[in-house]
Length: 114
Image (cartoon, rainbow, N blue to C red):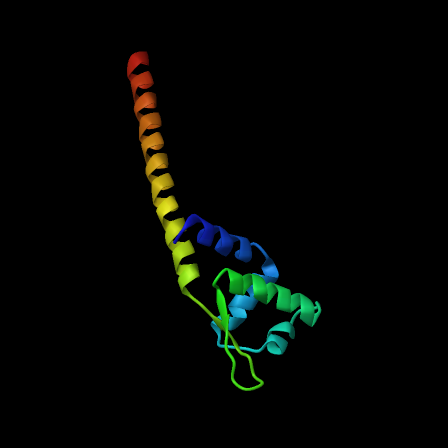
């Protein structure tokens, strides 16, 4: 995943309405009207959120006659989770080294005082 794709994913996930839409789509495909139901915003606003999600590759929209279901696309979420996991490993390793350094420093201070 390129930096731009990852940035698009995180940018799309930054909005709580878009995250709620993704949670709903995790349960199965839905139309724009179905997705708009729980929100106190206009259908046009929901459509704008869907466009952001679609541009980020987080959803796709099908076409079945008059019915245009939205579907969750899992790959960008997997890529974002993988990036977060990699960063977590890096920082945990750095923090472990810092902790070891602090313990060594404290031990040396105690030995010097004894």
